[in-house]
Length: 435
Length: 143
Image (cartoon, rainbow over all chains, first blue to last red; front, side, top):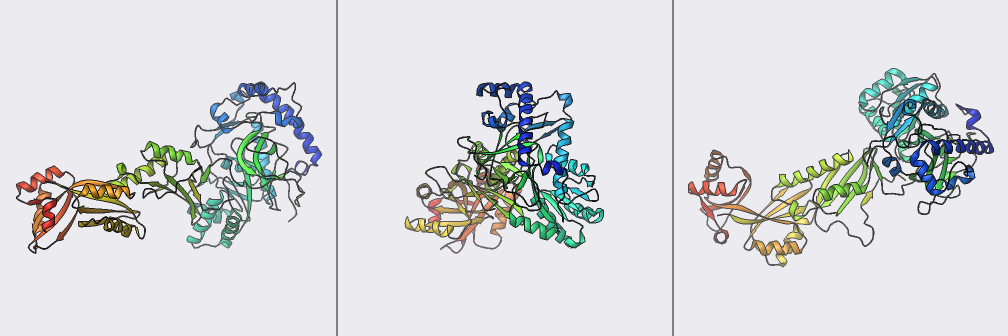
């Protein structure tokens, strides 16, 4: 298949032109953010940088970093740079780890987003003759609308199923003729299993490609998805703070994801010192939005760790490639698509009157994440009646679910059975080997 | 009069129970009665010994989680229908039984039922009014 581009002149731009374009856009964007976002202006003034002394790309590291906490501190609209009547869409994160992260889009921002997911759909071979089946959730989550926009842009027939009701989804794929599937990798695996349970084979469907993201997934998972659904599986990367899906996308070479550098600057930094690292060195990924007007986030630290690859790509695109995220700088876990911090679990345990002697065990069974919290039994929680002790386990599971929005299996274990440590306790055992 | 029973938390893993009995053996603790309740993840061993508090201390020192509960030890005739009589009295008086376990001893014409009810003092008075003999810890040694 010869390479297909949605915007060839941009996707295959010479490197010097990319740099020139980034520089121009960065100067404009910085001025836009500085003048219109008070919170950011104050940060920049503290750092001594302003539009009159900012020289562009060469000065990038003079710009202050922005963190998720900054977005929480300015909830809901403190980082918006345009009047609200110019904001035509809001999206938000689930808010399980704190206040919801709220982002806004002007019509222009949405048009760009559509173009960027259109690039990926085109790269995987989708055209107006395709039936794009969107099973990412539609709602405040950016997944559904993100791929929907791009699929609409290329003129494909969009099937906006959202997630859930998997048997029906399979029937729709078979009967409506879906050719490109967009959903999370674990949902794709689940669909593969459901297909089998329904007594069907991949040949009974019409799928040729799939765009999967929103959570970490491995090469093994890719092979399994490709086998069970009979399609070629591609990786997509994005985050709510920066735009949603489409910040970076995997091409036919499938060796990293091209970052849409005409709209984003990607850096890798040393998470401890904040110093920029040369391309090719593993570091924390930092993004700057060059064209987004409603929410012009610059130098946002993602806490994802990755490597940048500047080698020439056989697909012809000149945009830099990022590796799949290789881990986190913090201890955040993603379980069944939800962000979970061990500290949240610890807080619940202490609130419920347990001690912080616990272990979190995350695994994978039948392609679904399993999540168990083991906590040591104490005398005041013990009773002579089995039902009462069992109820304690259920109460704790419910308390955790309220905070985390996913269910954990709670196992009460013998005292002193959870290893103590001299230094930082190893609280998490993750057998999924995602990175 | 109620007697004391010790319950011990046990993880449902191979060897857990034998570790417990080893500790008891090492400390020369003789159990008069014992029952083991189990669920998927864990079990509860319920033990009657001569000195419950001393046993509790020893087990705590060995990192066991224990609980001391009041239960009733009923002396009933060792014949068909005697347990049924007791339970009829309970149900007529809305006494709820959480669990029970029984054993016989040297005296062939009587048996002992250890009963945990939801309301121990209420059950105690009902049984005494019905003329059922309640045993104390020393009595258990005679069985």
